[in-house]
Amino acid sequence: MGTGYNNKFSAAPSLAGYLFQCRYALYRSLQLVEKSTNSHVAIERYDDISFENANYAECLIQAKHSNTPKSLSDNSVDLWKTIRVWLHERAAGSATTDSTRYNLITNSEASDGSAMSMLRPYPSQRSETDAYVSLKKAAETSTNLEAKEGHSAFLKLTKEEAIDFLSKVEIFDRSSGLADVRYDIVGKLKIISEEHAEDIANELEGWWLNVLGEHLTTSNLAPIPLQQVLRKANDIGDQYKGGGLPVYAPEDLGAKAYSVDDEAFMFVRQMRVVEMPESSIQRGVQDFYRASAQRARWARESLLLDGEGAKFDTALCDSWGREGDALRATSSINTEEEKKLYGRMLCAWASRHTHPFRNVVEAWMTSGSYHALSDKKRISWHPEFITLLAKKDTIDDA
Image (cartoon, rainbow, N blue to C red; front, side):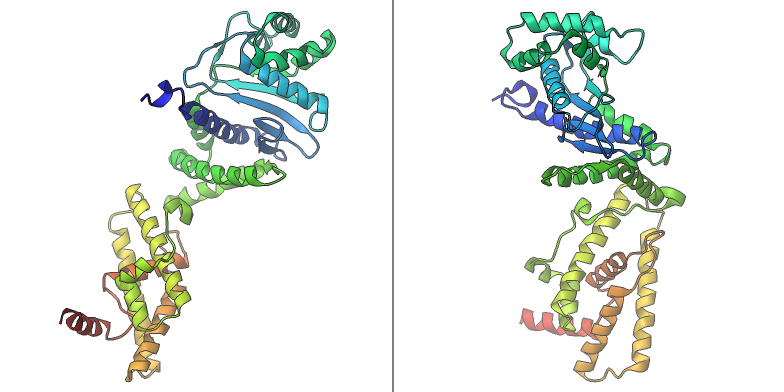
């Protein structure tokens, strides 16, 4: 069986096209927010991509991507499908005005002498009149059924209407492909951080796909403010300033929620021994997974300084010991119930305590790291947990 692009049933080209559309929308948003701070961007609302103000679409964009870029002629189906979409929106008048621009973005190339080559955004190459003549001829002579609706819509225009429409059309051929748009995004983000532009792009693109997921599943496809994109890029960039560590969302880290399998962990057994509430145990498991995954990612990305993690853990152990001393100084811990209460109070304190991991001051980081130390038996909640554990293991082995 064939695989990849040679397989006629493969969805890879279509998927690449959708990813290109999403990635290009992010790049163009970063580009346009500098000029039009009050604009919004939408996907699949009036077009593949549309940039809008409060009243109308400022720019409709058709994004066409090919894994094997080709030469585009006046008979290209993609061109006529695009013209059909634009003329439909133009006729509807609910989203477009005389100032609306129509852009076709493609990594393919317009063939020499074609109408598309005459509609590039360069004054020396443009000729709407010649483009009209070329398109009219193609529409009248082509027998391609896939392009028929586009042909019909164009031929219904008078010459003046058609030329006026084409004056608002810009063809950006030989555009960056899916991979290259990524470099374009990184380039735009270098103004935030030259050194960490790649890292910012990684996080921003992950956030962007989540935002688009929500955007595409809402009933009204509410457009996304460009300022929101800029703010997020700056927020991510701020994490890297002064050597700061980035903080990732739980879903980006693959952090898990509590499951019954977690009962095998030593840190869960520690909480069970002092009879922590079920909600505290489940939150503790979530903190453990998130903190462990976050620290592992920092280590993989070589963001941690030598011994930084070990120093953080040592500081936590010191704070744990001091809090334990304070509880012993004010409470009796002679009976088993008193020892369990001491353990609950100490564990509850650890879940609220925050100790900075460089620039990161988050309760889940401190709590989750305490549970990791508990799992390694470097700390305990019950003052005699190690003795109790040894007794239980002896009974279990008997």
